[in-house]
Length: 119
Image (cartoon, rainbow, N blue to C red; front, side, top):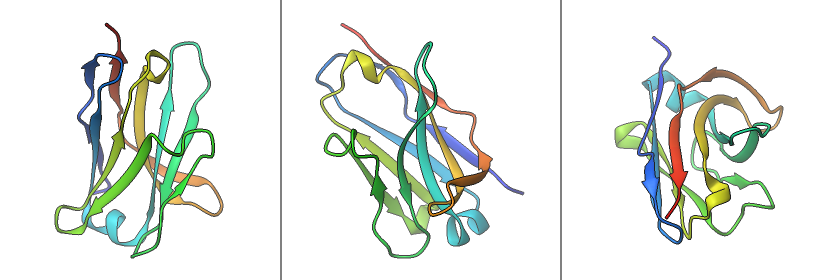
């Protein structure tokens, strides 16, 4: 069964940090690239990163590189999105998706996790 489940969102003060998790079913994790996206209120969906399958480096959207980083735990079939120095404009629903970094086509999406940055 294809499954992507995000978790780790919540209410965070500006300047704080979060680690979001994307747990994938085994077949997805082994053979698919995993992308992270976000969609803020009234905004279009924005790509954050794409992590290729295997042991290859993650690609980051240029505007977001620096405060966002991705790690993966193969033993747990999980990809993590680390966000530092959170800003109110980072408030969004964050999704992970399985697909292909090169074509930017993603076939499977998780339900999303809400991140709210507010004092």
